[in-house]
Length: 474
Figure 1 (spheres, one colour):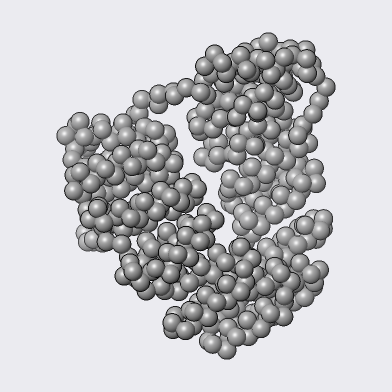
Figure 2 (figure 1 turned 90 degrees about the vertical axis):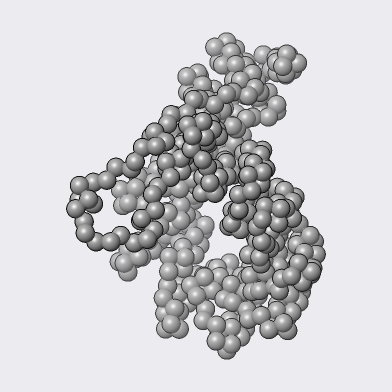
């Protein structure tokens, strides 16, 4: 946490914090949407396309749906339902493509209340849904840590005139495992035949992953044995899960034994397989052996990939050997490997941890010059890195670039930056950050507000009383 000496009460800053706390506790209506095209307008065609005598492929003959086109261009998901209703009021009849596009849009923004209301509307209008829609929703529920909702949706699929297959079953199985509901997943896996399914390789892989994540290698091995008994052929993913677990436990001999078993059964190891073994060697301090394995794998018929270089780069950076890591990246380029965002993020991460945020920022700029776009993790590490060295204005610049790139910071990043800007007395900047949080529907809890008010008031400013009074007035 960032600490500094208390300063006199900043009344303007205090009023700003109080205003935003009131604002964040009330529903703010979404801004009116802007229709990008009239519902009945035709898509423009260029003179060149009109002159072409070649018959276009069948998928190009389909006319774009104006609502779907406009929906894709909406930046604010809250405007999606308004746009949907607007088209309906204009006399446009919505069919499955429009409904499914709207469901995807709402699910991505985690507006599940509207998703569920829309699903009831779909059922009432007897619109036949594809299984892919429900699979996507099950996965979104999983990402939002709502496994029970995923279970209920799977159970109700029949009522939407949609046949459940092993694909949606596996999607739910994976959601349960990823959300720590391994017992439920195991029960579902055991009762697979009652639902009319026969587990396939994906089903077994999900269960093996679940047991290994819990550290129960014996249970994972039993699932693997059951897989062989039921004549379900293990995939490279199956072996990679087991090899990765053994490598993390430092059992390189066991991992290499599995590698041998894998090749004997005709399964060709891929770049991920070797990267897992390389990670195991690096964890034991055997960097040179790991590097040798990367070059030897090509003789085994598997070309090194970025992931293999990433293992070595990460190991060097973790040990503080930043210059050596940079040299390895130069070596990659000489071998005609173009470093990706993950590779750059390794250097940015460790430079920021060492308090070298300015150096990390240069890497961020260089990667953009080279045509490699930063991802959410890149921006987050940079904002946190600048906050760590108390360069909050630089952090704000990166945050602004992050928002312009449609990436969303974590709540902890917002808090750290707001707290730092309060320290610098940057009232307008604090306002900007809080407004952006509100747009993202991200809000600080009571404890965080108390810390911020205390920082604005100073240690003797009665922050606790002010926050209590603020809450009681709501």
